[in-house]
Image (cartoon, rainbow, N blue to C red; front, top):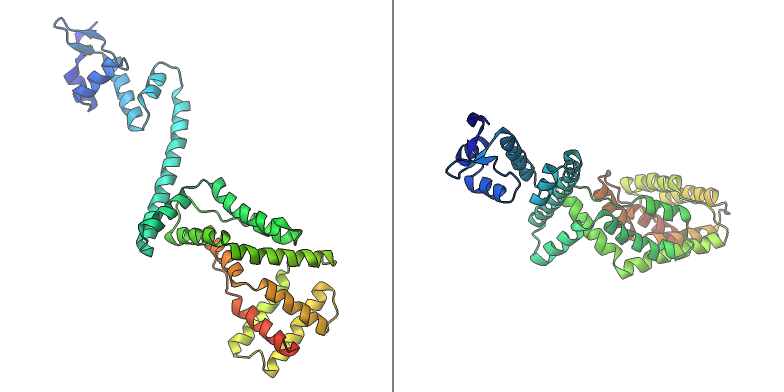
Length: 312
């Protein structure tokens, strides 16, 4: 063996940037054993040992434990397989760090105390499946518990809040508020009443689905009335109410009469819960959707106008 290819442990430390103590540790563990010994008993390493040591250093810097490093060096596991597994593990670590950063930013922006920070941290640390379970439990306990409108149930199931890997403080705050909302017993009871109302309507023959066109008509007509300062008890409101009543009659195949207006008001009173609208606003924030308009004043005006005409 050519002595020029052999390095004492000090020279090896200079070449690799590792400490003598670290190289000696790897040698003692049999991970990078010395190639030979000098007559005086000092460890010597050849170029292959140098390359092996540099590989060990790289693998350790990537976060691999010694047992995994040994398996790679002894060819018990292939480097590509191990690299893929560690890349996936690093992705998870990055996600966790981003969530922790989001919690800290939210704590700073909200001025949270230790209790709220702990609660927030636990919520964002949940897996996606665990977070979904919280919402599915709410859906199962409300619309899933009765034979309500299947289109509404499908909308709830397909519009799950999905907290991103790197959420903003607003998204973390929205997720916290949403969890509190769906766990609120009074809110659950209110949503269940909506589902039970829909179940009664379906039993009576209503097989219509969602009514986006009707909602848009109410939003446009009443929104314009609100913008113009038209009060629900003004003469101008009567024409708006007549037009919307006719649309309801056409949509639900009902007679345009006083009974229809009573039915419309009952429907609005059941559905017009501000907490329901808040649910969808929070989902939109968490999912990064455009902000949803506040339809509370719109349907409030509509219901007030109906009450006035019906004397209720």
